[in-house]
Length: 459
Image (cartoon, rainbow, N blue to C red; front, top):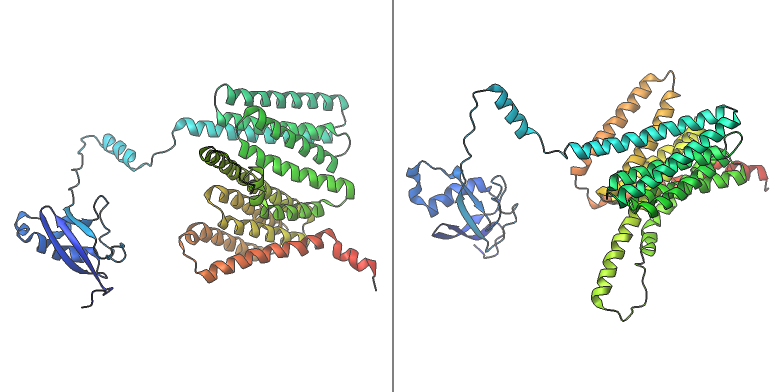
């Protein structure tokens, strides 16, 4: 047999004081090889009532090899030292005379360790406070628009401004005095919501893009101020400020051009999708990691500075990706809601949601959640609007519902366990680029550029 035969593994097996150099087949499971190895190393062990099932092979200092795998599958090369040892017997099961004690111990052993009551209570409190603030703010804005009482509007505006200021100061106290990051971030978000409502109420007259412009500007400024005062939640507040800045820019463009909401939303979504591609380079520049001439400084100080800049760049990248993806989702949702049942608006929502979901595969677990949530929100809104307007087409709605549910289950449970071939990965990348390219003509269609070009009658 040649020395380089890939079908054999030449290993040295130790068991106590016994040592044996063996050539073992690389394609046979370990559980099949173990009885023969036991016979070679411990031929006189058969009389103690033990069998080969009580033995295991392992690398020195490592866990036992999987008995269902072969040596090749376990990555055992030639010249490896293996240990043959007895598996420890499991402890005897405890006996209980009371059924209640047995049930309690079984539940305690079966339940996975959770985060505890206090973290869950803190998270629930933060979510409840933010949700109540959002619902109350929407109600205040709606009631203020529907009524004509000027005195009541001024009183409401003053109360909202005071509530926002109190929340902003409380965020600074919560983090700087009590070192409570969660409370600081929650109060900062609440202050941002109150600032947006105050900006909306400060503009007189019927609701329009000017109301949205001042509300988004106030929210963005409050986010920046809250991040400076509280000193916490930089990633979250920066992402919210990015969304508010994009919304403010879109509202400003709408105020100047008097374009319909569907066109403003589509243009804002297109710009946000384009900014997603520049987020990585922008984070490097904002963190100070851009290439520069080397200075004659100390090496240790330079490495420490680079480490800090790297962490800041990572935080900037997370904020920009979350902010621009959320802004794209907001623009697409506005386009779908304002432009339905136009085919161009519905197609724009579907393509944008698909593009955000495709972008989720190229990020890590922390940033994947932002793309997944925004993509699901856009696709869900588009499907919901289409389904509610499809009266009399029940079978088609049922089929589409089942298809989307099956696709979601497959992408969430089956797809992550599959290893795609290079051709499949390239195909997904090509699909992502195709979706991005498709967004551009859809935006032009929604904005009416094709109709304007036809109306120019250039011939």
